[in-house]
Image (tube, rainbow, N blue to C red; front, side, top):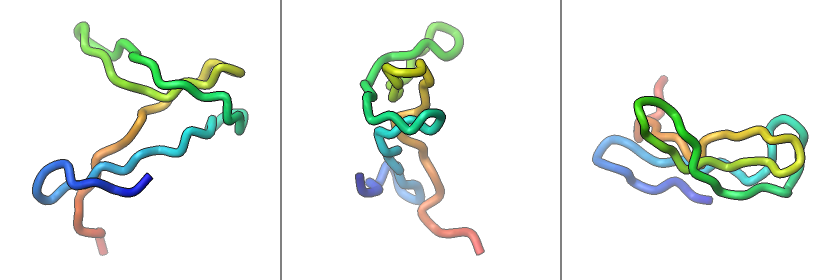
Length: 64
Protein backbone atom coordinates (compact mmCIF):
# COMPACT_ATOMS: atom_id res chain seq x y z
CA UNK A 1 0.00 0.00 0.00
CA UNK A 2 1.07 3.55 -0.52
CA UNK A 3 1.81 6.10 2.18
CA UNK A 4 -1.10 8.37 3.12
CA UNK A 5 -1.04 11.76 4.82
CA UNK A 6 -2.14 11.35 8.45
CA UNK A 7 -1.71 14.94 9.53
CA UNK A 8 0.49 17.75 8.34
CA UNK A 9 4.12 16.66 8.65
CA UNK A 10 3.38 12.94 9.09
CA UNK A 11 2.61 9.93 6.88
CA UNK A 12 1.08 6.51 7.44
CA UNK A 13 3.01 3.56 6.04
CA UNK A 14 1.00 0.33 5.76
CA UNK A 15 2.83 -2.93 6.40
CA UNK A 16 2.64 -5.77 3.87
CA UNK A 17 0.40 -8.67 4.92
CA UNK A 18 3.33 -11.12 5.04
CA UNK A 19 4.36 -12.59 8.40
CA UNK A 20 7.76 -11.18 9.46
CA UNK A 21 8.52 -14.36 11.45
CA UNK A 22 7.52 -17.27 9.19
CA UNK A 23 6.86 -15.61 5.80
CA UNK A 24 3.27 -16.86 5.60
CA UNK A 25 0.66 -15.06 3.51
CA UNK A 26 -2.16 -16.51 5.68
CA UNK A 27 -2.67 -13.19 7.48
CA UNK A 28 -5.78 -11.55 8.88
CA UNK A 29 -6.66 -8.18 10.45
CA UNK A 30 -7.62 -8.34 14.10
CA UNK A 31 -8.07 -6.03 17.10
CA UNK A 32 -5.30 -6.54 19.66
CA UNK A 33 -5.40 -5.24 23.24
CA UNK A 34 -2.43 -2.96 23.93
CA UNK A 35 -2.57 -0.93 27.19
CA UNK A 36 -5.14 0.66 29.47
CA UNK A 37 -8.05 -0.95 27.64
CA UNK A 38 -7.06 0.41 24.22
CA UNK A 39 -6.98 -1.77 21.12
CA UNK A 40 -5.05 -1.50 17.89
CA UNK A 41 -5.85 -2.95 14.49
CA UNK A 42 -3.07 -5.40 13.76
CA UNK A 43 -2.10 -7.97 11.19
CA UNK A 44 -1.99 -11.49 12.62
CA UNK A 45 -0.47 -14.67 11.17
CA UNK A 46 -2.81 -17.67 11.25
CA UNK A 47 0.14 -20.07 10.93
CA UNK A 48 2.45 -18.99 13.79
CA UNK A 49 0.36 -16.44 15.77
CA UNK A 50 2.69 -13.45 15.32
CA UNK A 51 0.94 -10.06 15.38
CA UNK A 52 2.33 -6.74 14.11
CA UNK A 53 0.87 -3.26 13.55
CA UNK A 54 -1.24 -2.63 10.47
CA UNK A 55 0.75 0.56 9.85
CA UNK A 56 3.15 3.02 11.42
CA UNK A 57 3.27 6.82 11.47
CA UNK A 58 6.48 8.57 10.43
CA UNK A 59 7.74 12.09 9.81
CA UNK A 60 6.89 13.23 6.28
CA UNK A 61 10.35 14.66 5.68
CA UNK A 62 13.15 12.10 5.35
CA UNK A 63 15.85 12.54 7.97
CA UNK A 64 19.27 13.32 6.56
